[in-house]
Image 1 (cartoon, rainbow, N blue to C red):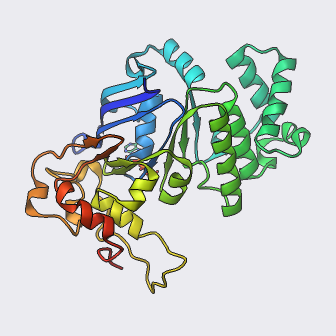
Image 2: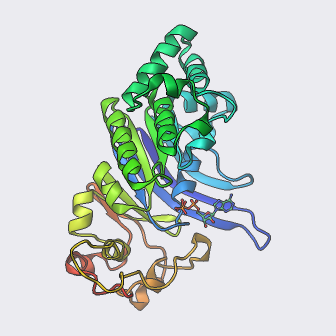
Image 3: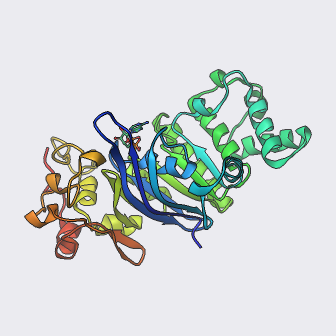
Length: 333
Ligand SMILES: Nc1ncnc2c1ncn2[C@@H]1O[C@H](COP(=O)(O)OP(=O)(O)OP(=O)(O)O)[C@@H](O)[C@H]1O
């Protein structure tokens, strides 16, 4: 059974000019121990998807569809049960570790109180565990870290503290929303390696939200590509790179900077990203797609599954070969 299954999640928020759709039927699953990358441009709905799992969507949002965590629909849980499920089964790591820590508490208090609450540890046991956890996430000077207030630590150190707290109870599912985006490049790779190592050692599943297709490909078993509030392609990193099936994925791959090809200007995807609420009939990407035809703007285009892959493109069969071999020719500067 999947650790997480999202089944046709639709989300709309109230707006003075009428409800605005932000998610248009997101379906995905995460297997035990699996890391799923959720990739797409800014505003495509990646963070909002995670928020439906945590049930922290904007106030007044209308949500339909099912969020099954180990087979139980978290959308139907009462407050007390939701709190218990969140504490036992889910952990969130966001871009800004400072938001997760109380600025008035030393790291030791943050970790020890968390461990006492979550596991019922006494203070001595929790302190010993907190120190072990900090060592496991690569903190060299554990004493100094335990005695520090958040403002005395670097972003990289703080994110390690947040990772230590997140993995402490070995939750079933880690939700990581751009956990390294705010860090410098060297710290980014160290923190990412620690997160990856801790997750694998504890057999935890993860949804990893990022703009960075390469980073997601390095640490995830499968990648789901989002566009305008829906998933347009799911695949393994290897197959996604070798043979993307959706034009948007192809153009995302083409718009990566290359260290070897000398291009005077970086190729970009033509046009601007479309918000979910702006999408009419047919394919949301049709207006920017070099391969679109008049038929692409009609009706609803389903996400068609094929083993561990899935694609939402009306021309998927015709384009399969072409998308696999196109190399940046369709992206424009
Ligand atoms: N509280 C809110 N109320 C209304 N709309 C919101 C709210 N938060 C986000 N949105 C809108 O929802 C859409 C999806 O946002 P979301 O944060 O999920 O995107 P994202 O793919 O995670 O982008 P980014 O990579 O920039 O974080 C965007 O159009 C955004 O403007």
